[in-house]
Amino acid sequence: MFDSLQDKLDRALKVLKGQGQISEVNVAETTKEIRRALLDADVNYKIAKSFSDSVKEKALGQDVLTSISPGQLFTKITHDELAKLMGEEQEEINLKGSPAVILIAGLQGSGKTTFSAKLANLLKSKKSKNPLLVAGDVYRPAAIDQLHVLGEQIGVQVYSDKENKNPVDIAKKAINEAKSKGHDVVIVDTAGRLAVDEKMMDEISAVKSAIHPQEVLFVVDSMTGQDAVNTAKAFNDRIDFDGVVLTKLDGDTRGGAALSIRSVVNKPIKFIGTGEKMEALDYFYPKRMADRILGMGDVVSLVERAQEQFDEEKARRLQKRIAKNQFDFNDFLDQIKQIKKMGNVKDLMGMIPGIGKAIKDVDIDDDAFKHVEAIIYSMTPEERSNPSLINGSRRKRIASGSGTSVQEINKLIKQFSETSKMMKMMGNKKNMAKMMQNMPKMPGGMR
Image 1 (tube, rainbow, N blue to C red):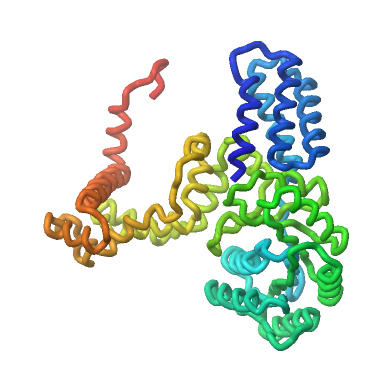
Image 2 (image 1 turned 90 degrees about the vertical axis):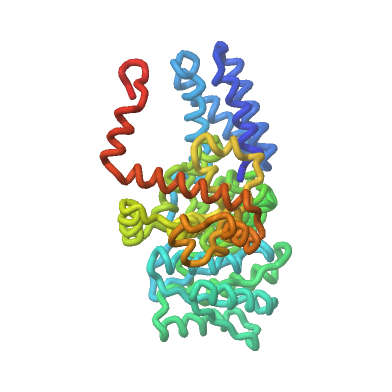
């Protein structure tokens, strides 16, 4: 996500981060490089120029030239302007109404149907809502089938009527169904086209006028860059939507859409899609995104994802097992499952400050734990509970069953043993105190 833009901005800011003398000349040169980086990311020229001019004006107005840390101050100004460009504060969707009606609009292929299901899943799991999904694309039977499959996957009811070719009628009947069955949110997926046309605009306008939604969300493929911004403007001029959803931000996106849309349509980005899984949907936080674009990581989002998967009761049981030295491969497998639920591994690592740049060229498979799971599943229940039983012959059998080698089995068991020892050490307060006492002292008396 934003790798190319991040690299170019980093190179631009390096001029002011070095030991050389800071002058108005290289401040001007740096802002010129920033503008060039934004243009390469497919940001609208006027927006790129306005942004770089604003950064330069603020930099010179805040005495960057005489600052003790001019590079850091300039980076902060760039960060603040990036956040401002994308909307500054996170904005929630409107869920008032009985039921609250959310209309989803966008071009064909932008990810509307998948987003509709992801949104239903998010509202169900995080907001304790009882959503109803509505298949309003009357032209593509596959879209209706897709929504039913996704609805079943997340445990959300889907309303559809393949015989009815009137999207307005379908939407109205779905809302009546929601009222009668106690659904508090209705999410209406609509038809799209490969390009903006009058028929599509008339249809989405008619649906909006008929059902009076509390929220209209425009879904756009972030990989289409400036075209996404132009499409957003066309839709907004016609239906006056409330917010934008950027999909496919886990792909090789240049970032132009995320940085331009707010300025062009004056509507907030509310959600971002970060993968194919139903959980891969995040609220959009401009300041956090600015952090990530400038390579500062996003620890807050990482912690929030971890907290979402945190089970207090399970944690207590695990703590007791560690204290009694009973941590086994079943516990190990459970921890892997929790990490996987947090999302794409490379995306998670990119949220750690300093790590994103280090791994940008490293190919990290989303199924990085797959072979570890295969090994553990190839063990007998007795072996998982009592790893000390796994001798040479058992290791050969596990390797054969998991499609791995004995060397990989040995490596995993060694890692598991070291992890167990470390966890037991951390769970023992006396040992922790001893570790702290034995730590080498740093200069100045600091540990």
